[in-house]
Amino acid sequence: MSTYNGWSRSGFAAANAISLTTSYTAFVLEEVAAVKRSQGVPDDAHLYDILFELSAMATSGSTPTSVSFYIARDAAGTKPLTQVQTANIVKALGAAAATGGAQARLEVDFHSTLPVGGNAFNSLYLIAKLDAATATSQVYLNWWG
Image (tube, rainbow, N blue to C red):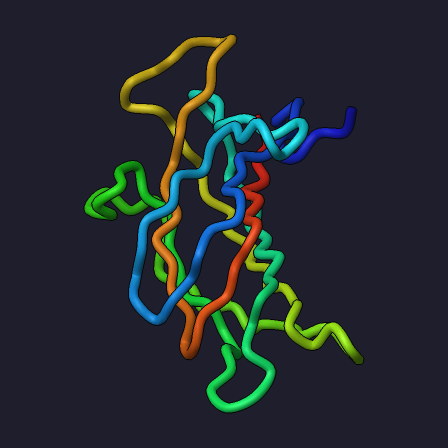
């Protein structure tokens, strides 16, 4: 396995079929049974990037063009781990224009304040909103540990 700045393993936390709107909403990023190989975040990890796979977007009228978000330790979003970022949505071509995605590099270290140990994982929280309309999204928070 390759390493990234000394980290020796990688994985991802997920959120499944979340509903994004124009208001900031909290979503848990952790292991999701419906998302194979997902898990939370280890006690000490480098949060590398985040990927939004969007569906059910409006194709006329007010359509989303970006997603704004940050990662936090808590569901209230009062303990942020990252700055607020805005990622442009790249929409699929052709008939599936209601789908698309957005990706952003995070590059931030995470250290658990309530360690769960070497065989368990932490849940983190995505605080996110769209600039317009609504969409459904799968979210993948990639980490190195």
